[in-house]
Image (cartoon, rainbow, N blue to C red; front, side, top):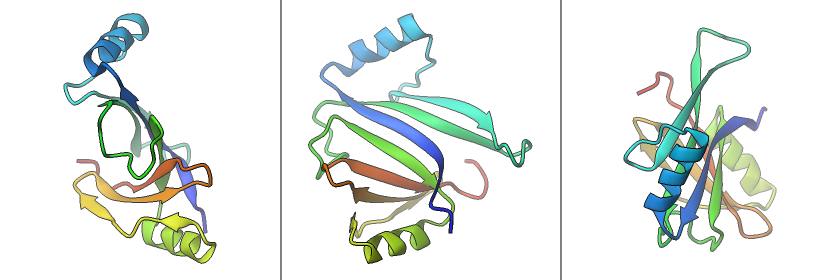
Length: 129
């Protein structure tokens, strides 16, 4: 079973989210949406007709979205079968959050690495929203 199929996104906390966003816009040319995210589009190597994307996202410094981690960042990895990956990780003794979120953007689950970094696992929807 393939576990991680790619990088889904990188998310980080900002003491001054608006200032950070403006810096990245000005100096790196990122086209950042009002939500604080920038979407990088790409094509699958094995299926060039199939689009994919990776998200860069800035969060307010006091966000609770990364909890229980106290780290200032979170990495999102793409997976093909979230339930299967989470089941194997549980069997291997990895700390797995019981919560799974489903939305038009796909399915999301979370794990913690040994250093307390929260990792988001994302199973994209069959069709992009």
